Image (tube, rainbow, N blue to C red; front, side, top):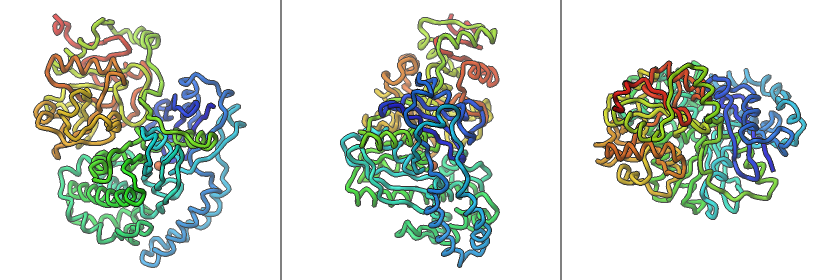
Length: 569
Ligand SMILES: [Fe+2]
C-alpha cells in the first residue's frame, strides 16, 4: 500500500513523504526545492520530488494522508480556545479585545476550503490526521520500541489549537491520554523570548538554547514560576503568561514579556526560559511516565528540538530510553500522517526504527559529473578518498561532503555536511564567519560509535536518538582534551554517533581521521549558506563550496580542492 503524506498546514515546513507498506521510503520539505527557508507554500514540488525519490507515480498512490484537521473539524478546539480566552480576559483586557476582534474570523475561517494536490492525486481517497496525532505517530511508528508500552508525547508552539498531547503507544496503536490547550504553550513562550532577544521565532530557538549556558537562570525562572500553576497543566499559565502566548510576536505579548525580563541581561533571560522549560516539562513527563507505568519515551514536536531538554528527560530515573523523531518539527508531520493512516487502514502498525534519514534527493555519479563539467572546476576521483579527506582535516582544512541522498529533518548527518577538526576552539568563530552565522553553541561533533562511550560516558549503544543528533551529553575529560571546539561552556556536546553500517563512506573518513590523529571525532555542520536551506543538488553544493571558499568538496566520489597539492606530496 502506497501512502502519500502531505504537510500543507501553512505555518511552516510544508513537506511530502511516501510510506510504502508501513515503511518510510522518501521525504522532502518544500524549502529544499524552493530555496525559501521553512517554506510554507503548498508542497507541489515536494510531492513530485518525493514520488520521484520513491520511484512511484501519482497514479500508484492508494491514499493521501493530510496532516492537520480541516477547518470545520478544528471547530471544537477553537471553541475551547475561546472559552479559555473568555476566562482569562477578566484579568487581561488585551485578551478581551482580541477575543472580540476575532469573532468574525472565528466563523468565516470554518468555510475556507483546503487546497488539493495536483492532477490525479486530487481524486485519490484522502484522510486527515490531527496535528499532534501526526507528531505522535511520527515518533511512535519510527521508534525502536516494537514490543513495549511507550509514552508518546508531542509538544510544540501550537498546532490544531493545541500545544501538546500524550498517548500510550502499545501493540502498534496510539491511545489518546491528554491534549494540552493552546494558551498554556511553553513552546510559544520560548518563541516569545526568542523574539525578545532579537531572533526569529520558530527558526532561532537554538540560539537561545546556546546563549542560556552563559547566564544565571534564577531571576527569570522565579518570576515565571510565580505566574505558573504547576499542578494543573490544563491551566498552567495565568492570564499574564497566556497573554504572551496568545500574542507572542505582537506588542501585546512582547510588552508583558518586557516587564517580566526587566533588568535582566540577554544571557540571564535565555538561561531563565531554558531552565523553566526543562523544570516544568521534565516534572510533567515524569508524572506521565509514572501514571502510564512506562520507562520509554517517543517524542516529536518543535519543543523536542531542544537538545538539552532531551538530555534531561533521558536522565530522569523513570526513563530508560528516549526516541526523538529526527524531523521533530512540522516537516515531520507528512510522515506522521502517512504512518497514522496506514495504521488505521491495517488495524495497527508495529513500530520499526527508521534506520537512517537519507530520504531526499540523491547526488550520484551521473549528476555529480554533469555539474562538475558545467562548473569547469578541476576534480579528481581518488581511490583512497576517505584517507585523502582525513589528511585534509588533520591539516586543519574545511571539507564539505555532498553525496548520496539528502537528509530528512533539520540536521545534516553526513551527506550534506561540512567537516572540520574540532581540536582548535577558534574554528567556531572562523566557521561562523565563513557561513555568516551567529551561534552561541559550538558546532556539533560526529563521533564513531566505538569511541562514543569514551567521549560521552552517559551514552549507551541503545541510545538511537544520538544517531540523529537529537540530544546533548556531558563531555568526558577525553572529549574536553580532544575536541574542545565541540564542547559548550556547560561541558555538553550534541554528538552524532555514527556506525559504519549507517553511512560507510562518511564513517570511513572519521575513522581514517582517528587513525591519523588519535581523535575519533570531527565537527559536522550543515552545508548551507547563511539562513539558506541545506543544499540539495550537486549544482547547489558547488555554488555553496565556491561562495564559502571552503578548502575541499566531496561530490559523490569526486574530490575538488582549493588546497596546495603539496599537502599530498
Ligand atoms: Fe507542530
